[in-house]
Image 1: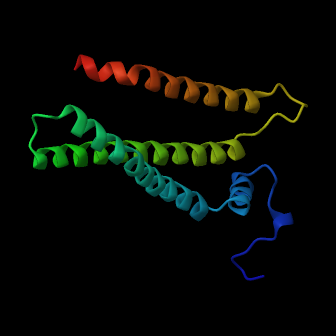
Image 2: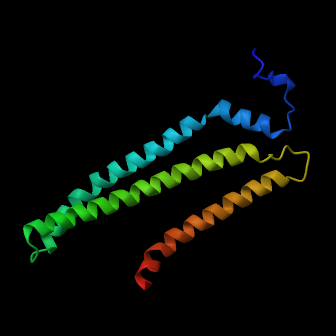
Length: 147
């Protein structure tokens, strides 16, 4: 063991350093970053895979008065927009998931001996996060129509 390493038994169990050490031992920051980037790429790829055939069919069915070049532009625009939206959603989801993993390890959990302050704080944060996401999903389609 070199001078920069600290023996695990010398670290106080209640310090943030120990909690951060436990985070890095279960999932590394590189794994979480790789998951976020993978979500970004996979969401974009899936968005294109789904939207291109749909936009193609809908544009050629209902865009009778558009010239061929304009139809291709509309298909490309719709596919790119859908791909970007899905990729950003997947990236945001993976980022929030990684953040919750870190928070769940940093916030002290209820061990049955106390009043459960840490567990109630954790559930409160999770509850507010879920309420915010549900609110964005419900209000999202309607908020853009009033601008």
